[in-house]
Image 1 (cartoon, rainbow, N blue to C red):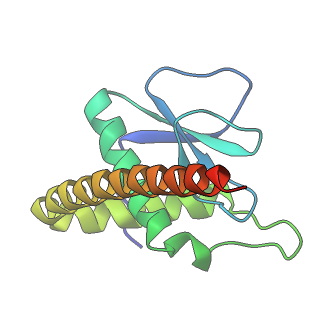
Image 2: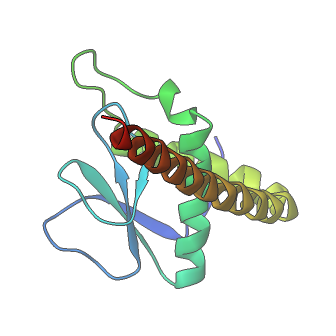
Length: 140
């Protein structure tokens, strides 16, 4: 087992919002999803500076989007992930990222570009749907 020094603290979320923190959904069908704002069932991931926080955001986002959290989800009625398994998954991902930091940086740039394109596509789709709805209303 690889033991690395982690640039973060992972805790069960309490009622207060903390500076330099992000949140990871711990229960439900979207367990593992990174969040900017806390919800009832989440972990608080606190970093020591903004750079580390952004690094951890993208690490969590990549783990979530690649469905890596699905391997550690437990529970048949209410799916959930445990704090220790989440920490282990993050530590393992950070160890892989340390081996290829340039690839990680490139992946962030590509994902950001794809997200921008998808947002534009959503706006175009909404505009076309509004146009279609207005056109149909003229005849009804």
